Image 1 (cartoon, one colour):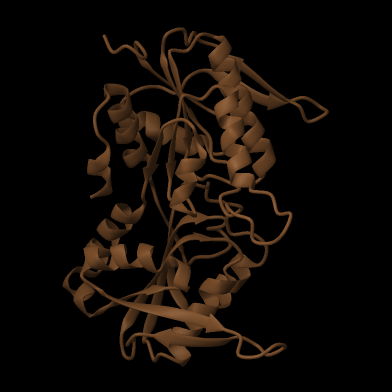
Image 2 (image 1 turned 90 degrees about the vertical axis):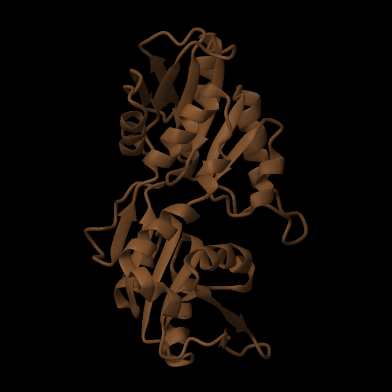
Length: 319
């Protein structure tokens, strides 16, 4: 018998139940019976309707909007499982909120990503399974093991099937200098060239000037990023590729579809042909924008959960 748990139990909060169901289908089990609700004053209440004593429990909960409600649901679920004598508790967080607050950008700034990591650990989680953290070093904020999946292989498979041999003549574009390493790894797997959109302000009170570093003239491009929030950077980068770089067509892909504020309107009005996204955050915008195309992460998370339970390497999932 595996020492840390006699069987796998998967539960979910209210952030992304469809993904949790799909993960259970992928590993051939059923979603655990539980109720996660709020009292009239907003307090979170969790009820587990089946035993977890001695089980290897996986709690699927993205901390997407409403971020604080979903985060609190996760913390209370962890505590409920801990007090019910679960053998081991893994917080499965496909999208980790607060990840962009990972450093002190100016005086007296909090490092909220570290605070959230402390809260998850203090609640009683034994390990964390997540995907495409905004900054990989956030793994070091946790004092418990973190398995950090990447969405890169899912996009590589999608575009390899979509474009085939045409990939050799396409260009992967990093929308800013900070995403170059991520974009380079993606480009190498698809045997594409790499370009960078660099934005800078030449003088105070002057608008930003976009520069395209690399040759995209007459080529189709794929902008690769970890998340799309308000889509401002993405749409400006796409515009620069067409107007300054001379690209013929622009696609985009990102792991996390935050899509807040004017994001959908900007994407609808942009030169981007298609935006491929992962379902780490539930799809609520496809009806408003026909450019969005969602790919599921359920098989990858399902295999990761099985490998964690069996205590075998998950590095195969990075290839």
